[in-house]
Length: 110
Image (cartoon, rainbow, N blue to C red):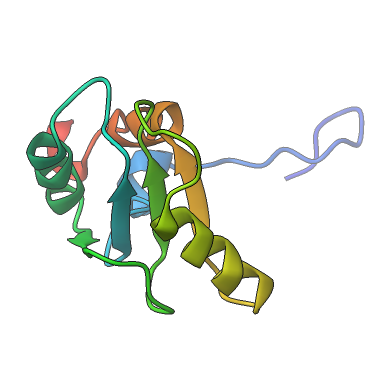
């Protein structure tokens, strides 16, 4: 559709309705203690969004979440960084980014 000033108008549907959560069907690894919740609570959040928990970083890992209470770079973070250098598509998230992602409403939360 074209507006009077020749600018294009794009209509979007409700984005929550059509998009899946970034954790949906993804493999997630936690490293370091989280400052805002227990690992068990965080695992439940990931599962609620359709994600899967891994105990170790592999080439199948999609996200590595770095807890705020970590000390230095963990072996899991080092492994993720090595795999990224080798071309694997792994996202490293700090705890605040993880918290933001789990604040996105689930489809059934409307």
